[in-house]
Amino acid sequence: MIKEAIQKEIDRLRDEKNHLWGTMIVSFSGSITLLLSISLYNIFKFNSFDLFKLILCLVGTTLGFLFLNGYFKKDDEITRLIKNLKKEVL
Image 1 (cartoon, rainbow, N blue to C red):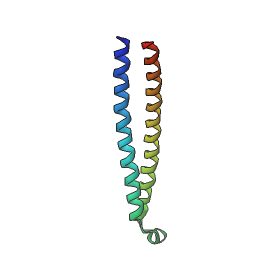
Image 2 (cartoon, rainbow, N blue to C red):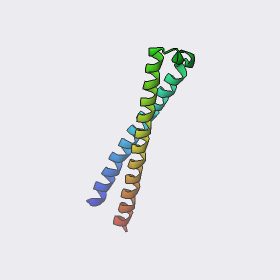
Image 3 (tube, helix red, strand yellow):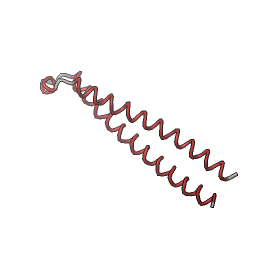
Image 4 (spheres, rainbow, N blue to C red):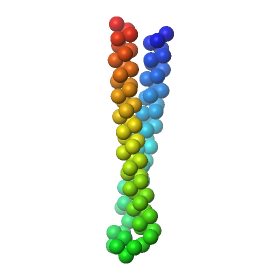
């Protein structure tokens, strides 16, 4: 009974980990795309549209790092549950 509950929790955490990985990839790739579309020459002329893109790029990168942190937290929880499952079996 406990073994099945631990396995279901591992499956749930693995699904969350996969979702975090996907959103992290989307955040980083969107930030890189925005960064490549910015004309640095126009930033110094105070082009508000390019400045807005730069702000969005920084926000996307920050969110990407937060999602990456969540991904590794889920990975640590899965590792801990697997160790508990091995103790349960033995």
